[in-house]
Amino acid sequence: MTTSEIATVLAWHDALNAKDVETLVQLSSEDIKIGDAHGAAMGVPALTEWAQAFAHTVTVGRMYVHDGAVVAEQTLEDGTVEATAFHVVHDEVTSVFRHDDLPTALAAAELNEKDLVP
Image (cartoon, rainbow, N blue to C red; front, side, top):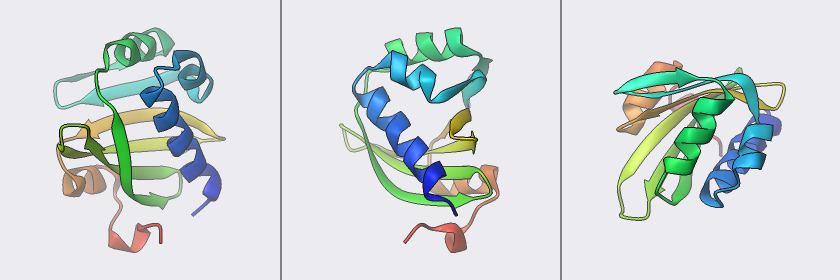
């Protein structure tokens, strides 16, 4: 586990919540992959479009990390709990995939309870 990966994902969430697209882009790779069960997109233009359309505030809960994979449990302002799997390389988010629940995100990232950040 590295604090760098955790810090990157937390900063990414802060930028998303603040609608600070410039910082979000700075924290992401040029070829970032963004997706969910409905599809995926790639690149900074896709990230910018997605971030500008994102209409929620996210509170990060439990985090899991191992070898660049980070899963963050998230609570939306309406109380909905979901999870997102990130991949971080050299302090840049290279992929973001939203899942409806924590077990699905953990399985997709090949993480488990032993990867929980204390």
